[in-house]
Length: 248
Picture 1: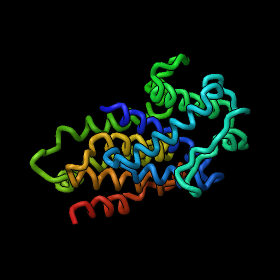
Picture 2: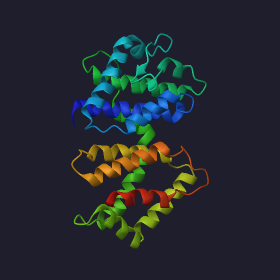
Picture 3: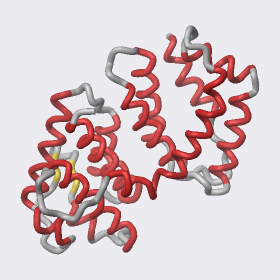
């Protein structure tokens, strides 16, 4: 995996995490998150622009990032006039609490350390930072993978395998567990979709149309899904309709 890929993934995760908390209050941030969800690692120009914007921001705010100084942080991360992130205003948001602030600084330090690997800053590894927010979701995906891996026929298409899994009852069991886990708060559906989207994006090199389609579907689901579903079950019919469109 190239360094640009790692940096872009770190930026993606940071912005999506920000938008999940502050997207309603800051519409330009929500638009930035949506833009990133549509940007694949194969979109070289767009990826390069995002990385450059964050590099410029980090250069201007080196001391503020290293010292976690939210008072003197300056400059927007601006893709366009309507698509940008105002970190200073986000730090002043009434939605910002101590734990969220620590997470924001950890993200910024991680991105800074990836952009400037020789800089003398505290060592903050990306894996440590994201483990708190995605470990539960990764565990769920791991259980999902363990259950289905013995039922996949590599000679069949994605939808043929999905149909076989439904007929065999495997997916019905997983969907039931999925719905219960969301209802009791064990997993956050937006975090789960974000983790799945990130995993699909790693596999999407633009050469496999089915994987590209799946990545797009997951991105769409992540963007259009609320943080919680309260007492409702996942809209499986809608999800399956989106996946059925892959073969059309």
